[in-house]
Image (tube, rainbow, N blue to C red; front, side, top):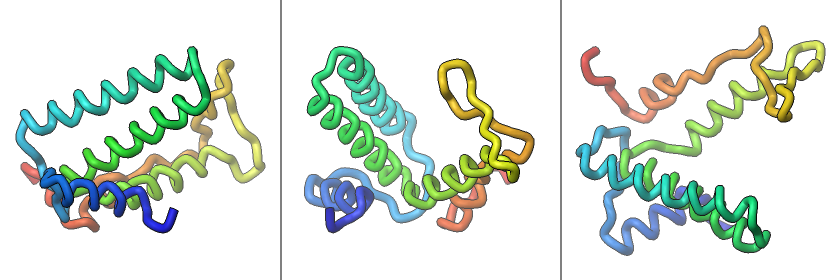
Length: 134
């Protein structure tokens, strides 16, 4: 793929006249609800196919979730790549300096004593976001 997911979704939104903002912005409750419905719809399809298969359909539905998530971020003017980088930075702190990893019984990686929570407000402020009420 020669373009990032963000660039591909931006191209789609521009081509089809859909909302796209360049800095973090609150949107109308109606638009926010619509984006939430789209995400829920795609997530439900992933949940269904992840159990029943086949693998090619799972790949399709996972990509649809990512596409809609990037579209929702674009509608809100959020640079999702930057947010993901901050989440990744934070998640990597779950690995302690001794290399020990704590897992829940189902395999989920747990937060250790060295965990550093993501600072998403700082990421959004660097993108031009000004929190309301403060």
